[in-house]
Image 1: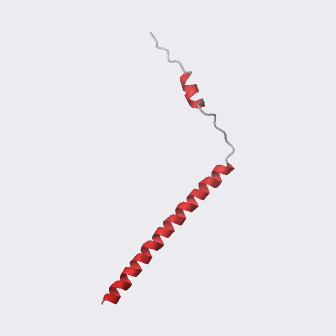
Image 2: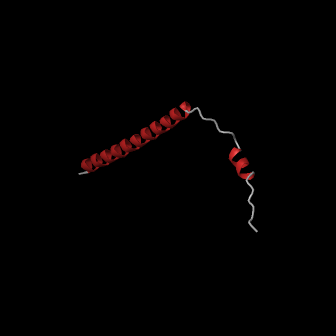
Image 3: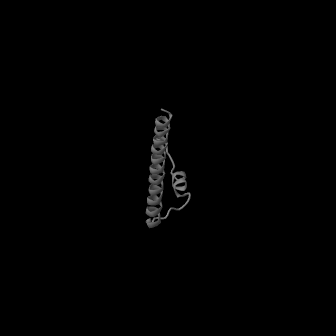
Amino acid sequence: MTDDRGHRAKRALLRVAYWLAAIAIALVLVAALIYFLESRDDSTLDTGSAVDSRASITVRSTD
């Protein structure tokens, strides 16, 4: 009976290890895809341009 319990515990550990490995591989593939797409992106952003454009807007009241 202890052999059967040990076998079940080993199978459960292997199942958990399998799913942890699958999740880790999936996360690595998603990160690699993001880095690949970012490396192909040619757009440039000026730092602070959104803040500057909002600061230059003046609100006038209609009295």
